[in-house]
Length: 144
Image (cartoon, rainbow, N blue to C red; front, side, top):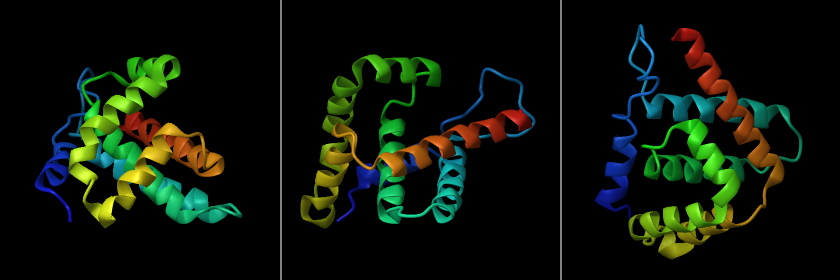
């Protein structure tokens, strides 16, 4: 079962303005970036061999939910914090996500989310998501 709090988190991403420290010709929101990231990741994954597509898609969902939780942190600061305190940040993010996603698939979705955020598995799939996460903002910046 999907809880209302999770739906609110997803819709929150539709209200988070991006590039708000720059004059913009168009309004860009976090959900735009995440959707663009998913499309790019899908195409990159299709070009590769031996890619677990469900890991790419779920990893993208887990990263998206995590990013919405910590959305008030500038990307450069967030990435530096992840570099230094990744484990603590992921534990905190999971403590916020857990009540929202614990009922999905009888807790299996939460377990996979914990595994994805806490372990360094799915290296190729993570690299695909990282590349997509780089290309999506680059495209946005060209618009800005």
